[in-house]
Amino acid sequence: MSRSVVVNAAPSKYAQDISVGPHQFHADEPLESGGNDVGPTPYELLLAALGACTSMTLRIYAEQKRWPLQGVQVRLTHSRMHADDCSTCDTREGMLDRVDAEISLVGDLSAEQRERLMEIAERCPVHRTLVSEIYIRTQPIVNSPSST
Image 1 (cartoon, rainbow, N blue to C red):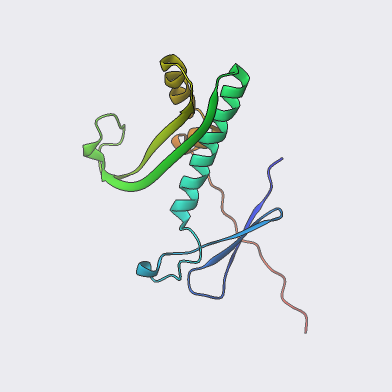
Image 2 (image 1 turned 120 degrees about the horizontal axis):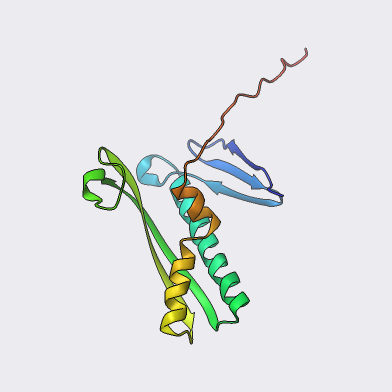
């Protein structure tokens, strides 16, 4: 069962307090963007989710296959690019978000195992969510007026 993520604006400028079950952390903008840099940016959190899911998926797959995967490092960056610079993209106009992921696999793996793990990396649930059509339903919560 999925836990709710609750985000509250913190007292300092752009900082956000985030709670997920018993876990608490922060998000913010860097100093050069007017924030206080008390946590990762929203895009950095998104990349962290993708990297964590990719690494976990590879570990689970390798364990099921009893492959000697000893470690995984996923390094990710986010940028924007012109759609016409992407020969494999469906979108032909405007700007696209681009995520570059570099995956390092540690262990005595064969070339075939490494190739298969790289294929599996693109099948992690977060990756699949990010490349699929997403419907986000946003609705206001109407607070009852406080009694005086």
